[in-house]
Length: 151
Image (cartoon, rainbow, N blue to C red; front, side, top):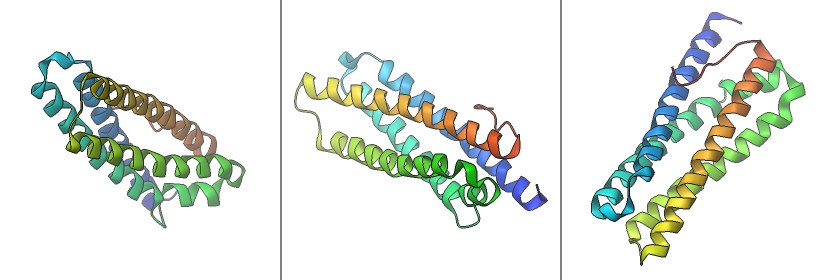
């Protein structure tokens, strides 16, 4: 692995940590009692906004023409299907975060809407956890490098 790519991988590792932190912040906000009303809504909104920012940074870094996924395809074509799955999920995640933020902007019409919003955001966190796990596996399969957790 050349020095430039090693530096890129270090940036991916750092962004991965930031994404993990914003996922944890969203989980913590969603865990608050919804009975807090405006406090709960503000905390969830702030956490979703941070997650959206970190997710967009992750996507732009990994999907850059000279980024991680391009290198994975070139370095280990045997895992190209896994890379393509990760790319598809990026689109889905960005769409879901935007949907949740838009839903939040429109307000909630009753407790059922709040519960549905909470459930969708919680499901998103679970999907992001699995996405990160598969990303780690792909990097390890290609380079024998542990990208790390949230450090």
